[in-house]
Length: 127
Image (cartoon, rainbow, N blue to C red; front, side, top):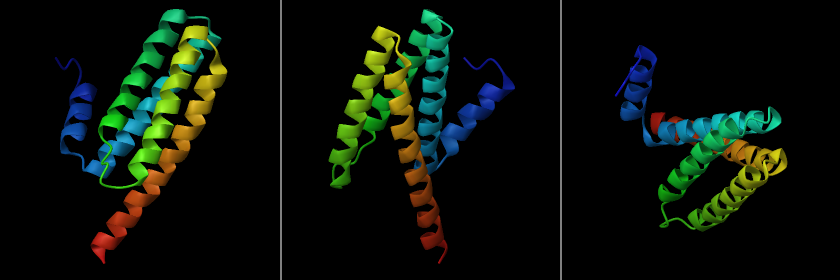
């Protein structure tokens, strides 16, 4: 159930977004939850850390499920996502920021790559 106008706006954004935009939104979400999980670890708030790192894991699972294995890069992305999942679990179990920080770096780089690819796709589509 939607509670606020902002949540309704977010839901509408997700329902009407293009596939590249949805992918960027997933990356934005996972990065936000990882940062919040790291913050929880630093604050020694284990509930906050666990909640947010689990949400980050769920989004990484969604990224895995969105892979199109018709393209060879999907297998490489799968390996990266599986590695990130292991690190997120490790960070959560040990309440250690370093594995989560590594995931943050990897996924930030991938987000930027997808953002550039989507811009190129838009430019090609407009030509």
